[in-house]
Amino acid sequence: AVPAGDDVFDLVSAAAFAAGFCQTLAAGDYLSRQDARRARDRISPVVDPVLDALSTGLDVAVNEWLSDIAATAASDLSAVAANRAPLVSVQTEISLPATALAYALYGDAARAGELVRRNSVATPAAMPISFEAIAP
Image (cartoon, rainbow, N blue to C red; front, side, top):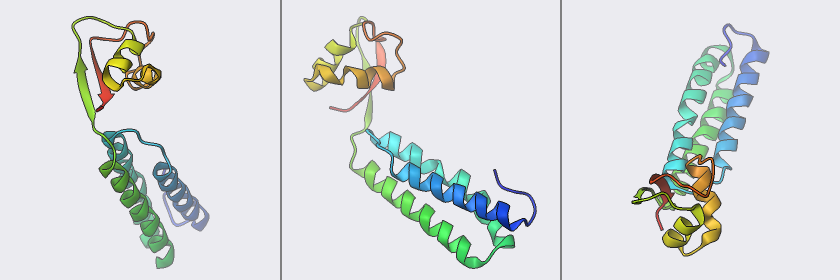
């Protein structure tokens, strides 16, 4: 939340929150290209309103500091996105267990949990016939 008014403590708090938010996003573990891009796209809606508020209430150095952190986080996330496999849509004829699908896709049944989490499946014994997976 961006503070209304010129209270220095509120402005500094908003800047610190936005900086921490950027650093947390950049430090995340993104398994697919789309995951990293979605994280990068979350930076601007949080940082831009804070930068606007800072431009009227604080020294330019704070604005530059936050801008640099946001730019670095966005650059790091872009690099991660460029080096990750994309998500693909998988279709099957029937519902199959996640372990069978993970083995068929990756040759590794241990990646079944990844399929279950990504698709928010209630039970790994019956995956939907259409789901998302990271490209093999």
